[in-house]
Structures are given as C-alpha cells and as structure tokens.
Image (cartoon, rainbow, N blue to C red; front, side, top):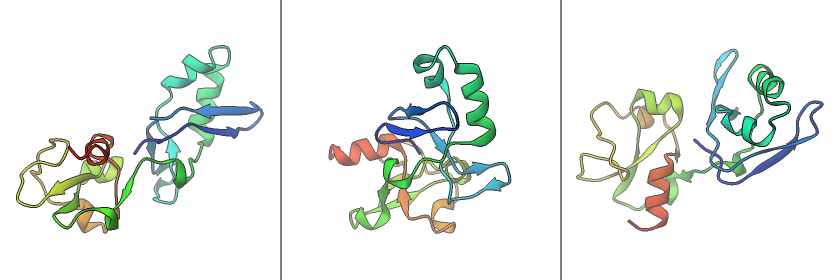
Length: 142
C-alpha cells in the first residue's frame, strides 16, 4: 500500500516532516504483522528532502516507526468494486498489502498480475484494494 497524498507530521525532535505521496507503507511492526499500523516502509525520500539529517532520521524512522493514518492511504474498499470485480492477492501480496482487482472470467488482475495461487486476500477476509496500478486503471476506467 502507498500514500495517496503528502502527509506532514511532527516527528520526535525533528519538527514537521513530510512523507511524500507514493511512499510505501507496511503492517509489519517490531512484534510482527498488525493491520492496525501503517508504518513507513521505504525511506529513499529522506535523503532527497532531508539531506543534512538523513542518516539519523532514517534510523529513527526504522526504530520508532511513523504510522500513517488510513485517510492518507491509496486504497479502494471492496464494497466500491463493480459486480464483476473482486479482490485478489496471493500470500506475498497479502503480506505486503498489495491487493489487486480481479475481473470475473479473467486469469490476470486489472494490472496484469497472473492469478496463479490461492486467493489469500479472500481467505484473510481483506476488504480493500491497495495495488497502485489496479487503482489507477480503475480510476481511469481502463
């Protein structure tokens, strides 16, 4: 899952920092997997936007985590899919929270990912789509 817009927050003693749109987040915590958390998972933007403090800021983001609120995440709820659409995700997609849109009667998802394994997104009762490519294609009616 990725952020759908910039998120600015006061973080520790750094003052306000801005996590840019498109930053990947994860449910992985120090104690395991928890869907209640959306921690920043990629830190390439830190060097670009905060070059004088990038090493220490990256370390604190990794050690303490920065939770992104749900309203800043790029996703579509399952209830907003069309009748011929459903969610799909193999075990890896579920773990990384990159759930796709499947279309009835097709062997690939909307973004072209082959559906070769069990639908773990359905097994785990997930309720949203989070694949950025699927979301973009749905929004553009492709």
